Image (cartoon, rainbow, N blue to C red; front, side, top):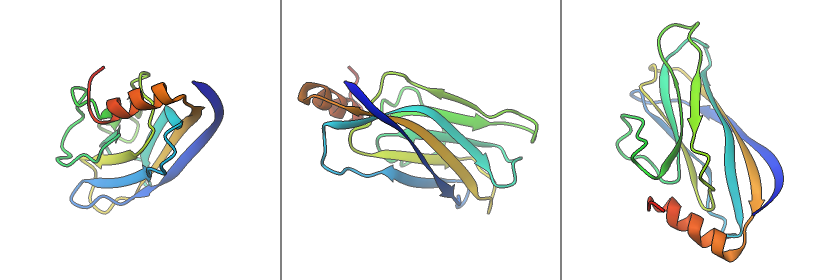
Length: 142
């Protein structure tokens, strides 16, 4: 793997009934280009709302919890309690997104707009590395 550059992906999600989802990287068919997340930040537009958020290779159908046993999830962020509580995040360092990347916000306040910022490093992959990471994206444990 050869690192080529650093990029940021950012935007907003308006959760409905406490859940918001957005696909932020869409499969472009270029399997020899991969992305490794190095930072995942989420905050409400008001700055004080609690939430749970995850980064995953596949859409999360039942968005109700952060699940480290789900191999498609590799990044988690959360904020609990008061406005003064810090946002915390955790990223599994053993991942490379080749095809799709999804942000899911859960347990969020009604009608509160949430911001996200994802810092990624772009990598050039050889064919073997690309195939291994595509298998891992399919929720297979390696």
